[in-house]
Image 1 (cartoon, chains in turn green, brown):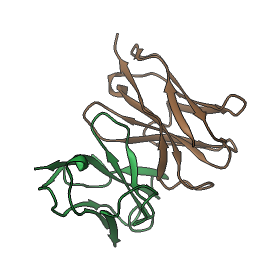
Image 2: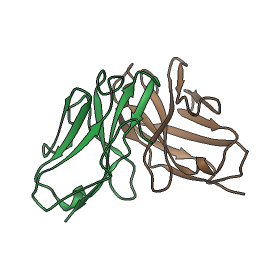
Image 3: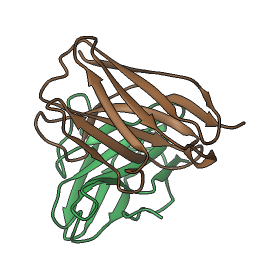
Image 4: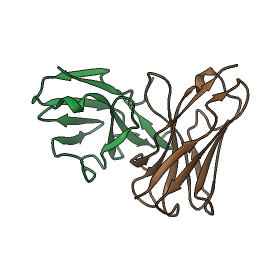
Amino acid sequence: QSVLTQPPSASGTLGQRVTISCSGSRTNIGRNTVNWYQQLPGTAPQLLMHSDNQRPAGVPDRFSASKSGTSASLAISGLQSEDEGNYYCAVWDDTSQGPVFGGGTKLTVL
Amino acid sequence: QVQLQESGPGLVKPSETLSLTCTVSGGSMSTYSWNWIRQPPGKGLEWIGYFYYTGKTNYNPSLKSRVSMSFDTSTNHFSLRLTSVTAADTAVYYCARELTPNYAVGAFDVWGQGTPVTVSS
C-alpha cells in the first residue's frame, strides 16, 4: 500500500480536461514539494512536473499541477491520445527520509 | 546531454545477490544524487536508494538491510547490490538522476531505459 494515494484510473475524451489527485500527509506533501511522472506504455517514467507546479523544458503547457495542504493534483487540458499511460506523484517523506511514490493512475483517452 | 544505461543479469536465483550497473555518459557524476528505482510487473514505482558523489548513501528503510550502492567516477559507473533476493524482487530496475544538484527531493529528470530482472530458480 502506497504512502501517497492516487485513484487507480481516470479517463476522458479527446480535447477534454482531466485531473488526477494525490493524497498524502503532513510528513510528505504537507512539508515538501510534489513531483509528477508520466509513464507511457513500455517506456521509462518521465518527469512531467516538479517543485509542485514547474514544467521541465519540453513539457507542453497543457499540463499543470497544484497543491493544497496534504493533497496535490495534476491537470491535463486538451487531452490527446498520446497522453494515455500511467501517472505517478512523488514526494520526499520526512518519516522514511526518502522519496515515496503514489500507486499510479492509469489514464485512458476515450 | 546526460544518458544512463543499466546493465546486469536478467535472471537471479533466490537467496543470491542481484548486481546491476548504471553507466553515465555525457556528463559528470559530481554534485548530483544518483538513484535506483524499481517497478514490479504491472505495479508502481519503488525508490530503492541513492548515493551522493561525496559517498553519502540513503536507502529505502524497507530494503536497507539488503542494499548497498557504490560508484566509480573513473569509469562513470554506479552500482546496486541487493542480497538474499526473493521472487518479490522481480522487477524492472531503473537508474535515475536527481534534477537539482546537491538536492534529493524525488525529482528525477534523467532515467535509464530500465533492465528487467527475474528472480527464479
